[in-house]
Image (tube, rainbow, N blue to C red; front, side):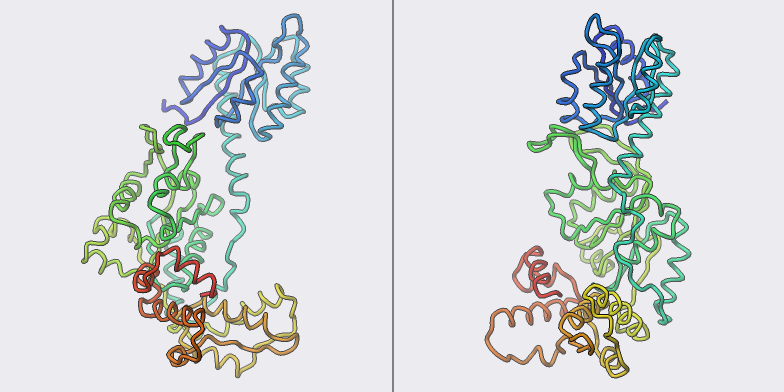
Length: 447
């Protein structure tokens, strides 16, 4: 029988009790700790991650009313409200133990205990603990972060949506390709929502913004003491997505030496936290996205061929907004309604002339650029009439109106992004900036 990954804490002043309980439970759980002094409980819990506590009800000699156990149970609940606590009690304290159940204990065990009953009670407590942790961490998992308009009149986009319908029911790896701003994140989330994993976590990891130093610790987690700042065990983002979906964005920007680690993870469905030798089995579904031409990257030895074939079981090419002109008015209406509510301007509307203006622009920034355009327009319009503030055309970008440094900086960033079709790494290199510096400037200019 494979041991369950769990940390059990036993608190009792009887060393024989501690020994026998530890020996039995160690057969089923990976870590079992013991304390003989209840005064050490809170310090221990503040330094260690524990999944369940076995707590005796009496510690002071001559006192057998169970008040010690109730006191320390409340202290634990103050520190860790969701931590399951199993009380260990003698026959005469059963009535008190039942009362304790009403006050937050998860179960009680009679001394001397039946080993099978002890295991069953602790195992159930561990399952409850895991469920509580997951609910706390992912309590908003069912709320979509981007309620974008997914209806489409575009034949190209309709084909993509049909493919998404078919692939969502499977656990196949999906690679989403497309320019920046085409909605790859939204479609990845949509795949998750249509899958059988929809009630489990959807974890978005932007590999482009993750520094190489943090790659392993953020994705795989680490064991306490693995490095200087590792003060406690830490489950990485992928481990926290157990039974759910991991969306690895900007995978084309991952350095070669990190691609090897990722390939091993995807292929074997196992991970080891930094500082640990044991492997943890994974049950997650992977979705990937990039605006890079991965075939070209493979030919130029910038991307591993074996990783490319591993991630693109199903490859979906998301059309740019200029390739789905039929959807511009629908998307614009959606964003307009969104920002009318946000900025309390209910009377604004798009007329035919404004829609025509929107459909005659090339939208190099795709849906994200349209979103920002409508938001700016709503903010700067009066209460009754929508004033459409369109992005600058390329011709006007080439015209230097004045020597204002900020204006020129925005123009150069737009030109670099357009030149490299939204590839942040190449645009940053062309501008002589780091990726992080370019991201900050894009945020500044709302690009």
